[in-house]
Image (cartoon, rainbow, N blue to C red; front, side):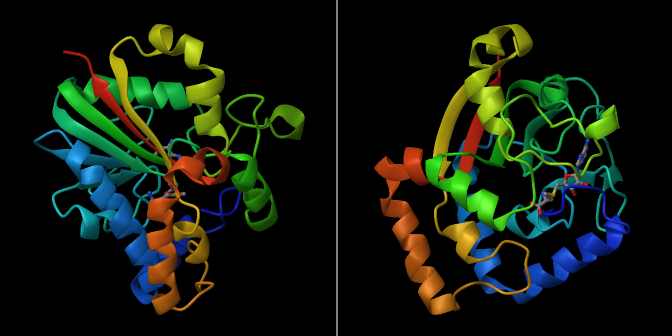
Amino acid sequence: MSQNQMPDDPLQELLDRRRIWAEKPQLRLCYERWAAMMRPYLAPGGLLEVGSGSGLSKELFPEVLLCDIVRAPWLDFRADCMRLPVGDSSIENVIAFDLLHHAADPHSFLTEAARVLKPGGRILLMEPYITPVSYVGYKALHHEDVYFGGYHKIPEGGAKVDPWQGNLAVANVVFNRMAAEWETRQPDLRIVRRDLLSFFDFQMAAGFKPRAYVPMGIYRLLVKLDDVLGLLMPLLAFRIFLVLEKKS
Ligand SMILES: C[S@@+](CC[C@H](N)C(=O)[O-])C[C@H]1O[C@@H](n2cnc3c(N)ncnc32)[C@H](O)[C@@H]1O
């Protein structure tokens, strides 16, 4: 969600996102491309998405089970990502689009996801990422914090961080700044892959805003350019794709 605090009516926010998803082919193409990138890294077997929000993943991965901290009729169950109502070692894959940077404690979410995974199972994450260019872009176009000092900026007065507070730099904090702590914090997980991506795709689709910045014909060309910008992604990327695997 673009806002940085719980909306008055979270369900209405999710309904608005479902409508925009249905009406905007650029956004669907963006997610279809991300899903195509993710599929080869899924372990054979079941799939749970955490922080599913508007539930768009059901179109990308028809077999997926959906849950979110917000209750909505299209979700299979309600769950806090740090306390999943799922047994130990019971599923092959946990996926999450844009959840990690909302979790009050991202490492607790990863530990919880590792608990529910079978050995060899995988966590696939698609998250915002800060590079020199995306720093400027996110600051100009987006409302969420970009904060490197911890998981989340503590609001003045020390109020509890709410589940809709996001920090776009969380992946940088967890996977770069805290990298030396990985083995201690996540002894059961190894990082299989981390790819930087997304210069044009989500940005030119204007995310979940009602209108894309360019018509579909131009959009198709721009996203093809994303595919050839590989070596420049450490400068340009707005996103990181991560594959984590539960050790056997
Ligand atoms: C940016 S939205 C992403 C929604 C969806 N994955 C998508 O890509 O459209 C973040 C979602 O994470 C959910 N969320 C935030 N904190 C959560 C938590 N602790 N446990 C589960 N879901 C949470 C929010 O309710 C929201 O639906």
